[in-house]
Image (cartoon, rainbow, N blue to C red; front, side):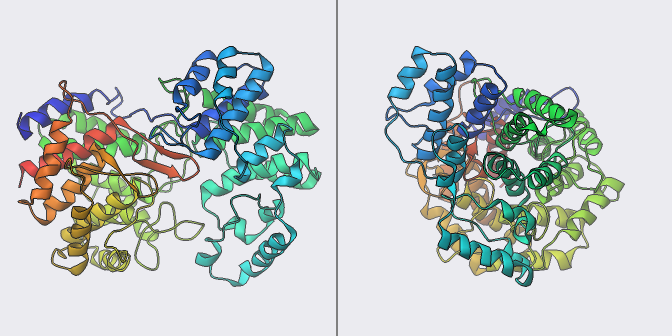
Length: 553
């Protein structure tokens, strides 16, 4: 089979993931944290854990009795302890021999992570004081809170409490909390509600926390459209209701939150971390199709373009999910990729939505030149891949040399001593390095020292089978289609005749299934506590990108 045949066999699989309204949408793989939290919610509302969920736990447990953070496997102690809690509570509710057998395989482990410890304390297995920081550490944390108003915001946003002790509830009233990353704030608030209700139970503090968190909901009843955060929030409001803080708004939050959580169930029986990434999926699918043949796939591109235009946020950006009725914050990655996709589909750069999206991106460039996910400060950090995507969009729009120049300077200064760039969201080092190389080469910096070092690092990381692979921490693992594809693409940009790239292409083609599909791998990263995810769309868009680039060399 040649490259052209490989592309032709893959395209129908990608097109199957396009919905009637034009959007592309894959199904993310299940993760242990949102699955366990969902199970605890089921028990808290008086239901039993269903059989599909129990089968998922049994199937996901490895031979050593552990669970990993995600479908990549491994043995994670905190994940295992959280699964143990969910299954133990379920078995207390209704005895189940399969659960008992699964529990018997779990080794003795010591509680460490404070979020897991908190959930154990909530269930009555450990005293609440065991999650509190020692007095000395608490004093240091309190000093940091007092200094926050006079410290630079960038420094305050990096303040992180120890992983094994809960931050004090008073943090909610400080600038440290204000400048945390949005997902961190929405995770802490429900945990603070649970802590306060079960400890001091100060009615004014509980009321403040509940008011803030109720106002943080998305219009679809979720929090941040993230499974673990939403499940924690539902648990918090159930506890609040049971402690006498119930009212119609709390009842509605519990009902709508649980209803939303039920939509997180994956076909494997577990729960995925986000309901979908359909803006990301749609934009990248459009780019893949337009690069292969924009005329042949014009009907599909037009439908997707209309869907993207209809899902632009009121602030002129795009969020990662475009579910109707949502109020999810816009982010720079989905905004820049959407602009690129619209331009590749034939939408003019003078279109009002494109111009507004570009203005949104210009406003959100950091002072140092990079782009973070949401906005400068507020716990956000600049990201290599996002900055590269914005550069690609700005290059096609034109007349944005000043912004591009600042971004390129930031990318060049962000290379590690080893020659790679670490990314924030996808499999860290290969993705960051590939996207940094793309941005530098597209802007005329092919001969710069950083490109040479980045290419050399990628070449040094190629596995003997011709592919690339690394885990959530950047450690080398077996090759994946996705990481092989974006690494190969970057090398092809530098040298179309590279033998490293040729081996990468051979790996992609040799691992294509007879029907033209590829098996997805866990490369997407949300949060290091949650782990990663696999999305079948990622496999196709990145593989097609590399194959088409090789074909066009």
